[in-house]
Length: 230
Ligand code: BJW
View 1 (spheres, rainbow, N blue to C red):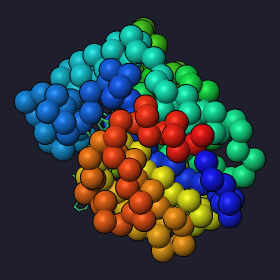
View 2: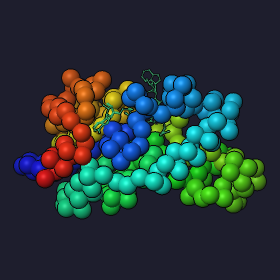
View 3: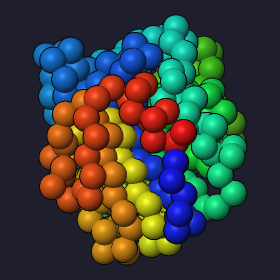
């Protein structure tokens, strides 16, 4: 990467970075939630209405995640994280753990994590284990209600203060493999522009917010990301 004048980087990733590992994206032709719009089922109301459907969906996602590996794009970002002496934050919308399996450390999962369980009664998160089920007791909670530790529509994404603080300081903002269909992540590019950052998009095709980027590079993440950080 040409690091002239860059001291602080924020990288936003979406489902497209994990597509070449074999994980489906949300809004492509083979998108998740076949037969359902994610916006209709990925909600607290859907969980309350049909918890078995929602748990089965995340159980299947967890099983699929165990079969796949980080790809060259995850590896390149992990190498950047290890080598970059300046400020850096990788903000992923993905609930997979491929960034951390590749070795990334400066990472925020703003939409939660597949391998985490959340007690809806007490708000505590714990690692998801095979023994967990919706009825499994949560230590220290009298009436546990376990659910996937996933940010559904209408819920507040995680670590927003940390993310906005990092964007305010950033002089490079890179968006990788996200359609720009879901807020607040879709608005980060505008916030980064207002903070004076250079903005670059890497995607298979232009995203909803393409016009807001200083530069757009189109192609597969496994080629574009290693090219960017090299
Ligand atoms: C490749 C590739 C390859 C493929 N290489 N690229 C009206 C207006 C504005 C906002 C709202 C509104 N009504 C409601 C809202 C808010 C709502 C929202 O945005 N709704 C939209 C539908 C409009 N947002 C929320 O409710 C959020 N919370 C919130 O807003 O709280 C209030 C708040 C206020 C103020 C500040 C902060 C907060 C919560 C959103 C939760 C999203 N949850 C999900 C599911 C959970 C995770 C899971 O189950 O896995 O998160 S939905 C789903 O979409 C998932 C993703 O993280 C998210 C984004 O999807 P992503 O990653 O962009 O995937 P795709 O499939 O859309 O795109 C893939 C891209 O990859 C494509 O562009 C391909 O081209 C590309 N690609 N292969 C490179 N090889």
